[in-house]
Image (cartoon, rainbow, N blue to C red):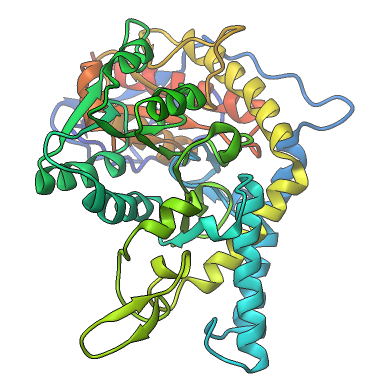
Length: 471
């Protein structure tokens, strides 16, 4: 038999069993890329093949919540789905799916505009969702919650509404090299318009943003600091309360990207004392197409509209308009009503479990993942090692020497049914700082289990062995 091996693989193997070998026979002719071989039989490494002890007594949080997520109970490419791409998006529990169905089947209508039953019901549920978000992050007033189509729009709202109104030439904006593109690009655009200066905090010797250097950057020129709470690549957690204090000491504002923290831990905006915070529904068991911006009410009240249209006005004349109070001022047009209601249902679901319970379970699961992954040969894991003082978020970005992360992710998916992420994770500046162009990322949520981690490690070792067999 003649086999063409991959440059960029498109694996079409017959479905493997979950043993330690993959054999390609003449009956499954495979076309990859360039180099030719006559036949091959690849055996997975025996490293890290220990299996987690089965649950004894009370089931883990992962085992007890998995039944609530229908999508997890399927096969992909002939293998049981193991979903480990939660930093990109989370799966949705039945309660959220039913909330969406109930809205569209039972009271679909526009909000704030009708006096009939359906409109009143939709309005009540939409505003109830806003109150749930406010309570979830401990905002002092539900008026401090602006629904947006995603977290990216929330950052842009602050940049264009607050930024254009408050920034002047030579004013400074502090960010880190580890920020998501959605936190960098809007401020690049605003800085170019107004002549402001972007200042970036580099990584320290531990491979995380250098907080000591950040503290030294603050001056009276600093007008806003834009930072993540939890890194979507490094799994590191920034001391937001301290950063907010340093910013406020020089009269600056703080905008926090909380997309990787709000779904996984208790976030209290009053305790953190941040001025703005954004998060997205789809990463916290809610629907896509909606996120939210928290802003202190005095700041929101001082900001001009971001978009014009219906709902955000008070009165419209031919030569001018007056504007509604927040949050309506920033919610032009028909909003994502069903999605907001779905987000409210997701918050009910998460609150029913308890965010501290979720966080505690994920700390344990994260440590287990790191310990299993770090012993894979020739692997480099980015971010801090867990310790008594350092808690990693439940994700690991990594590279295996001489293997492209997209090759790893493709083989894991098509041969093992394991879903991970590969690429730059919308963090190209960070990857350049790390000296690589891309990485693979495995990210967990509370419905994952140690058995998921074990299977991933088995599949990763099998994948590495497969590619190394061609060297």
